[in-house]
Image (cartoon, rainbow, N blue to C red):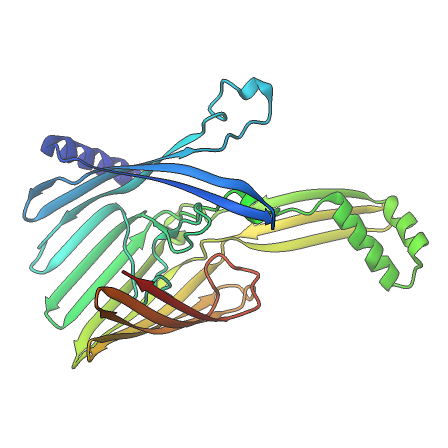
Length: 365
């Protein structure tokens, strides 16, 4: 969009004018155990972060960030690719790229660009946080997030009251890990569908031999119908949050209109016995939803206590509306930090789970 190009150009100009540079580098190697006596390397990636953080004056700050991801595992499928980027795949992603202006009017901050903004008081899992995109590309970091393009306004007219408004003009889906990590296959094979057809014919009263003969005559087609939300004002994501402090409690309530970051898959099977054809279409859409959220946090005798809940109301009857609740506490002692949480809801990146009750804990030094 035009405003994005203008904002990016402005931020880059400010960054180089100030000549402010910060560099971070990290390297990770993960092994996946395929059997008790063997291990297969299914994810190996080096990530480098380059950030410019200039400040024009006390009322204007900006940031320009780049993230370079170098895959340690090649994606070669042919000898002809040995000189191609598939041998050493590298991707460059935009990090945070934004401009913030403080005191546009007294106590009001306006931010535009690509930024990482998180809502919620709980640790790691936040049912009210539906703004930024989940980054599941590292298969063991299910709480990582990616910055998104947005316009964000924060207003604190008095010390006990805060208001936030957010608008996201573009939908940005979650990043997924390599399919080799979880053995993911989104489409069935023709043989799997044929076996399902055999089972269906047997349930209808045919014997196994006859059912297999009938199924062998069928011509099977497999298609994927994938679509993302269109980039229109009608489909933009937006929301707001109000927060306050009451006695010893920090309380907030939020409302956000957006989408699931992972697509919801609906299989559509059309079978025509007259023509002996079976058409399988996997329809994948990002469900539109409204999230009503609230959280509360306090500190009693140096023990931090929090509770957070979010209720997702979907526009369509499929999928079902969802409730997510998390409560927890943390405490620091003699250089150690410990926390304990109970979570009810859908665990991140676990769409097919049957369990909705989780106990989480952490101990750090």
